Length: 524
Image (cartoon, rainbow, N blue to C red; front, side, top):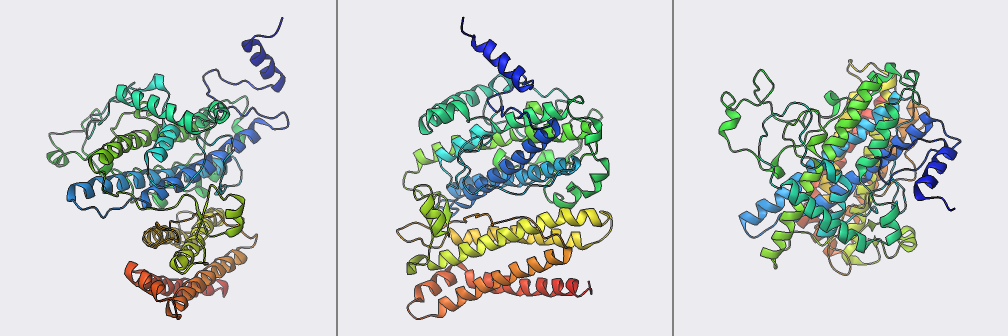
């Protein structure tokens, strides 16, 4: 008699010697026989880091595509609210990315800031990676990736039920209805085999990670290096500017409306609630599990938190924008709330030829988009610098005490500077024309490697080389703007304020290179 489905699953699990919890969803890339539980845990955390990185840049691209130049003050407030809310999610994803790095450091594993260019077939991605402007379609993917389990929606947090700062705009029943709507549409958009096999929530990966890291029989206490605590990224270093405003509470920890002056002001709507960046460090198993649960809770829903603080989850933010976006389009058919940015912009002709249907080439063959090409190239250079600086902070943390002023603090300052540069260049790109119509967009192209040199001196030399390459790109833009027959390029740069930005950037880079020169000379 043929095996039943249940018997077949049981037999396969026995063969692979892997106990897969029954409540774990479609994310079950069973541990290979040649992998230890710790190795498998590191692999899943490494994948988690790539997912957090990929989600962050997709959210940023969608936010940068929003056009705040609306005719009416009311419409302008709405679209700027979308931008503020999505940027809050992206900032929180940065916290998630750093927290996952901390978990890797705790396990004695290498950090992972990598991300595939176009991970169409990565087992753990909740939806195909794609840089796209904000739309109903992109929001459907964002909601799907961040959504909680349907049976858990509407349930209160198990801990303290603090009064919310503002009521949730969408009921659990309406959220379920929207989820049913978007999953039906996603099933039609993507091939059936992908829907059946790969589409899942990001939270399901964390379900498996938490289940494994919680098991002392598979991950013994000796796997956790408590001495790595000072090497990990901390909230004090990275998130001081992104925290909820202080509020008065009563003896039981509930918000105190009678004595708190903030309650005299109207509560902020969901799109204007500030980002709450969580960067958790861990020295023990208990702390690691708590940190990972906090990430899952912030992405999916408040019921996963220990306490209900009223902080909106990523799922709640996106579902609110989705509902408002649809209503906006119905009321304002002639309005253009989104810049006509391309899908998956790239400056690499070779990459575009490999993926002609899924990428948009921004090249130098046409006068009307040559400025966009060079600014996109500059964006890639600064993106690489940001990732290099970020990786360097973890390397420096091993050698220098975290409580002392050091080169690490200076490098972290450079990371924040590059975050600003990416935002500024993106603002220029979405206003620069693209050949064939529309505007350009930030390409977020990954460098050929993120590995740092072994010698610290060579890391500084690499940073100096990247700054020199960036300066060359800036000079090429100015040289092109002065060339005959390229008057339109000069007009585009001046109109967008690109000339002022480039001069400021070059001046600041000169100061940074001078500082690096002193380090290499042993004078800093």
